[in-house]
Length: 115
Length: 114
Image (tube, rainbow over all chains, first blue to last red; front, side, top):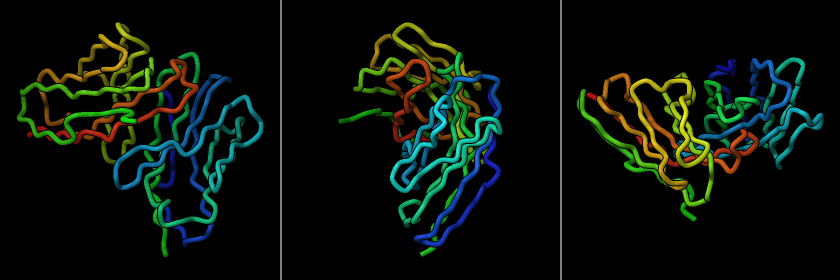
């Protein structure tokens, strides 16, 4: 099984400010994909952003961006201009080949947004 | 669009009882999977399938059984429930069989085993 570490069980951010959630993982593969998922209080898991390991450019989706450091096996999520609706659990999930059909999730970071 | 539908959403069982969690998707996804979510442990893969007639074990398969007779359905069976199986269960599907695509999740099923 792949090891995924989210070292921040809880984080908080002021509304409109920026916050970064960290994720490190352990894989011997060179070709893989990394995902961040959001789980709001409704419990529904939603994809936030996806990064392909072979791409050097960091992925961006509106206010969400990643800082992908392949050599360090680090995949952090930056949320800019935080909004109240960003309050949720965030899970990092790398997926590596050749066992690409097994996702391993981190333990999650609970994000609180302070008005 | 229904997406991924899980039933039931809540269930209470007694130790030793059996039950089936149903999962259906209408996106024609080849890949389907079951996860359990426990406090402080994230999501852990129980079983997965890359197509009808093909299933395989994930990280925590013991005590669970699956089958995949159609592309749409992927039920999870608990043959003899134990308190350790108290958890929230998620079914997820993907258009990618090789891990390149996102997972689409159901709303989850909360199971309590007394």
